[in-house]
Image (tube, rainbow, N blue to C red; front, side):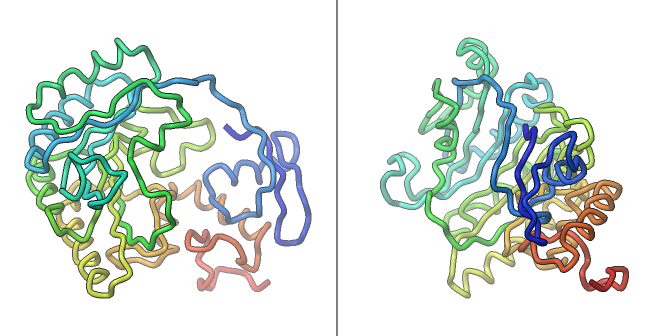
Length: 315
């Protein structure tokens, strides 16, 4: 958790912000992205959690409906300290991807548990009853290695994203979602994650207005391509996902899930950003944006404030 920060604002001033010095700016930095200044120093309050039990269990894509059904029942009573997700993945057919999942569409349960090995294994026991798993990477690991659970590429890749916040995993989602990731799908990865409102965490006081805190589930999909035809296929995939997930949307999202290229293009980037906050929270961020960045120089593809609106004052 951020206790204090050094921030260089667009007026060239270097500010040390904390609970006692410009607390509004510190508040805005916690969830408002890069909209208010360039952070050069952070003072963090750390959590002592050197080791976790984490990893993923993989099955062929044909097990997706069985896994989603089991996950929906399981997540309703899983302990709040258990982080989890169901992922649909097409890893490339290259090393260092392990042989069992290399170049084929798979479905996986991803987990992270901060407690004992015995407790963690007991909690995920129902998934070991799903036959046909092809790879199990769950183990005790230093928390600093948690990024290895997803086996994401360390390279900066051109990506087209899709994201939604969902209130439920319905029967129709269980039936229709697996069809969206078959061999040759334009989306290399999709993840249905247990969200904060699903019991994983509690909102920090004063930041309940970050939209994802009201989300039982978060969904994210990603295509990696620079090919125009494949980009069009990714846009069409986004439309299909919209149809699959429309009935379960909460209307909010997570700011970190928004990519510069997003599909389908049914809303402006600023409208997408606004939807990641509750209205009162966004209104406060907007007021601070006007104070600290009146010309709208910061924020990039996750810009706060409708700069083209008549309500935006002349600078």
